Image 1 (spheres, helix red, strand yellow):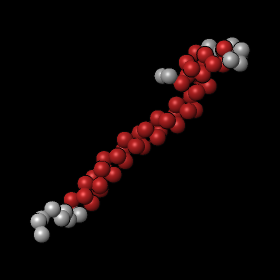
Image 2 (cartoon, rainbow, N blue to C red):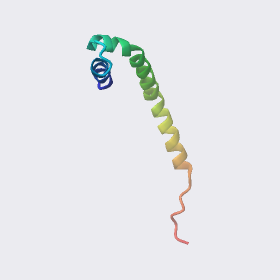
Image 3 (cartoon, rainbow, N blue to C red):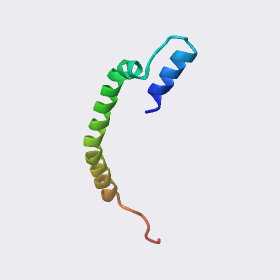
Image 4 (spheres, rainbow, N blue to C red):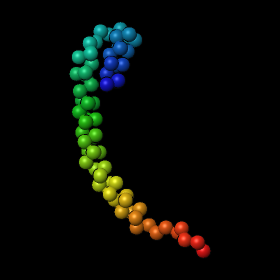
Length: 67
């Protein structure tokens, strides 16, 4: 949402290479696909990771009793 228009603007202004927003989006397509796959993998794994963290936290004894 932010990176593609920034790339198009910087390509047009700094490098003086004419690039449309559509061309910029097509150039970024491999990165969109990679980011989508990583995000879906994280969404699948996160509940499992959080479940394991809560099991570990519940098995750790607390030492809040006065001595």
